[in-house]
Amino acid sequence: MENISKSLASIGLNKVEIAVYLAVLKHGKSTVTDIARNAELKRPTIYQYVDRIVACDLIRKTVVGKRVMYYPEDPKRVLKMSETAQKRIQDALPQLQNMFAYSSSRPVLRFYEGKESLRNLYREITKTSHTVWSMFAAERYFQVFSQKDGEEFLSNIKSEGGSLRDLVLNTPTGIQYVKEEWGRPVAKSKLLPKEFIFSVDITIAGDKLLLVSFDDLNAVVVENQAMADLQRQFVKFIWKQTK
Image (tube, rainbow, N blue to C red; front, top):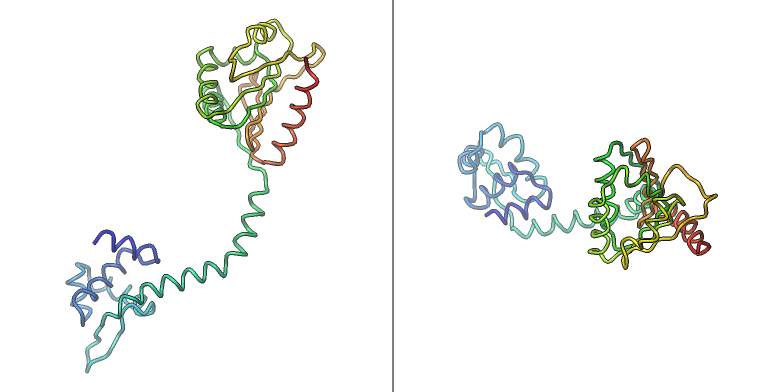
């Protein structure tokens, strides 16, 4: 019975309508009192919902003398109701597709603040099968994240089949980071020229662009494929030009 109820719910009937319909289907010719008793519902509730089931052609209403009777229709009407609903959706599909195309082309912005929020963000962003590209300052990064955090993020990338390419700010910690070849073979890093200075770190993964200020413990994530692709091209170009 549970499977039947789920099937009827899938065509738009609510719990009360399902109970009313099944009561008439099972017991045949019924008055409102009969339906209320068999469906274990109150009579005012039956009056509220029975006409919609009649309108769906699942049961029919007949006046016999002074009594209103309800009879079940062939259950094949349920299939017809489903087909009608599917046709309406198909007719509306072009308009729905246009709405989706418009909404999906607009960037989605998300904001993060605080150390734990940034940690959760990096956990999310590193669970990817893509190559993660980043430009970051090792000093700032390891002031917020521990070595254990870094290993967790790298493990996420590795387990998903992704890889990491780091362009590292030229500082003592950055020099050591590149020299130790941290994260190989999943990660590869290059040291940026000394004159290349920035205060906001950048990470690109899939359709997401991260702008992170470790000094202020906040970040902005832009979810947009075109914007992520453009920034990725810039970072890849710098990567190729860097020894």
